[in-house]
Image (cartoon, rainbow, N blue to C red):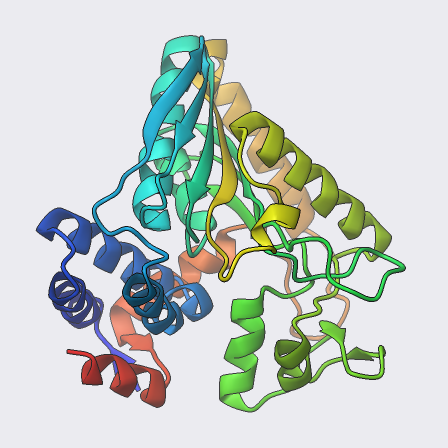
Length: 333
């Protein structure tokens, strides 16, 4: 089924109001969930609405709480999310990192005690729209074994880099697992195998079966041992910069809550060479595009290029949504 952007946002707005969010927060949540789905990231958009509501009902998300600054060190700040909605907290902290960057050239906000931010790329696009480069990441509960280990000890810690550009922003949004668990669940809902190995099965063998991976929640790190190492250092950075909980501590809780995040923004206009920056970026993009395809019909893209194409297509034709997911949401109304 396909649903218009306006219809989805209106339905979700009413749903969040029903669950006692203020009008402003309901609007922001509805917009973010809808925009994520519009961009083709159903796994962290419409497919996450019901789990989000379940976390609210269970009390893991404090609907009236918001992030607040607790310590300041010039252009570096620590904030506490007070276990409020992850989208609200991450948006607020991204805005603050942007403010600090425009004031000092660079700004960093480290956030503790927050909840799942849904699509991390949302905040990369937010920073790029404000004219800032961003490096943003989060830790998670343990959902991957460290390379060479059997049991989960590291998180798939999503990592985002964005670069503003007049002809279309560059936005890298990636989990440190080969597939995010939201994406794995999306393949499961469609009854499809993953296109590449995504985790381990009960026999400790790599598998493309999303059901087996979801059952075990043992994801495969990108680049094998390299992804394992990257996950560990991102967790360390998020923990020490925010003075918050590590993946280890998060894994001891009943649910994935109280996570730690970092929002770093750089304001490139301080260099006063915007045209030169655009020239460099476009040269790199043109050089990357100008390559013989590996297979007929293949194409190369810079990070964020396909997202922009999907957004345009879905605005025109409607947003593809799983029928069962949408019906389940309507039943909550």
